[in-house]
Length: 358
Image 1 (cartoon, one colour):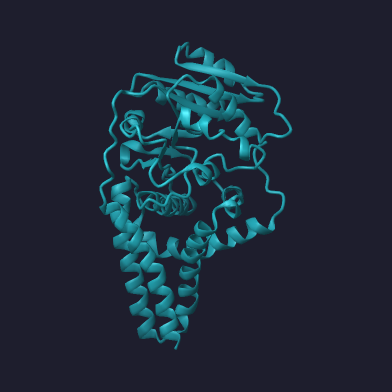
Image 2: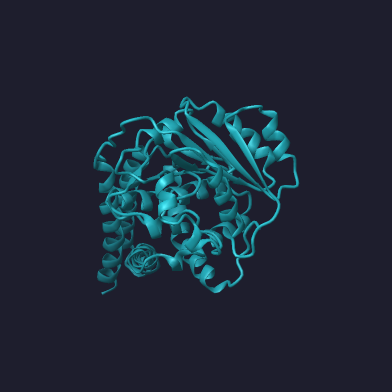
C-alpha cells in the first residue's frame, strides 16, 4: 500500500513536469510585426544609485534604437537624480516623487507616474537592481510585438555565485520561470515577473492600469497578469538574449523575507491557478515524505526514476529558456525546494504584516 501511495504522488508530480516540459517542444506562432515599435523602459527606484549606474550603462548600450528610459525616483535620499542627469542622454527621463498618496502602494504609484510620462508604444518593465544579459534584449521584445499581442512575458534568473544560497536561489527562480512560461506557452498564463515584462501602452490604459490593485502590497506584475492576460494576447520570451539578470540575496533570512513578499499575493490568484500550484507542490512534498517508508530497493528505484525525469525535463527546458543550472546539485536543491517553498507559502498566509520597501 505504501508503494502504491508513493507511486501515485510521484507520477502526479512527474506527470505535471513532463506535461509542462512539452511546452518547450512547441513553436510559438511568430509575431507579425509590421513596424518597429517605440519602447519606454519603465523603472521605479528608491535609493538605488549604485544599481542604477550599472543598469543605465547597459540600457544605453542596447542595439535597439527607438527607446527611452523613464525612471521614477521614489522619495530618494541618495544622489540618484544627479547620477541620471550626469549621463546627459536625451533617452533618460527622471521623475522625482516626494510623496505617495495614501491609497496607493508606493511601487505601483512610482511605476504609474513613470508610465504617465512615457511616450513609447510599449512599456517594458524592469527593476533598478537588474542587468539585461544581452544588448539585444529590447530587440528580442520588439520582435514579439505583433498586432494581436498585448503582453510579453520574460524571465529573470539570478546571477550565479559561489555560495550554496545563491545556487539554491538560482534553481528556485528557474523552477518558478519553468512553471509560468510553460503554462503561458500552453495558453494558460498565470503570472510574470516585473523585472522582464512588456505591456502595450494602449492596452495598459484600456484595462485601467493598476487602478484595481493600486493599494495592494506587491503584485504589480502577477496580479496585472491575473486580471488582464488571455490565451491569445500574450507571448513568451525565450533564449539567452532575452534574459534580465538580477542579484541574489546574501542571507537566508533576506531571501525568505523576499519570498514572503512574492507569495503574499498568491491568494489573489484564480482558484484554478491556486489549485495547479497546490497540486504541484503538495504532490512533490508528499512523495518525498512517504518515500523513506518504502523498502530500500523500492526507495532507490523510485528516487532514481524521479531524479532522472527531473534531470531530463529540466535540462531540456533550461536550454530552451537560456537558463544555466547546476545539475550536480539537483538532488539537494530539489528536495530543499520541496520543503522550503510550501513552508514559506504557508507562512505568507499566516503573517499579517509583510514588510515591503516603502
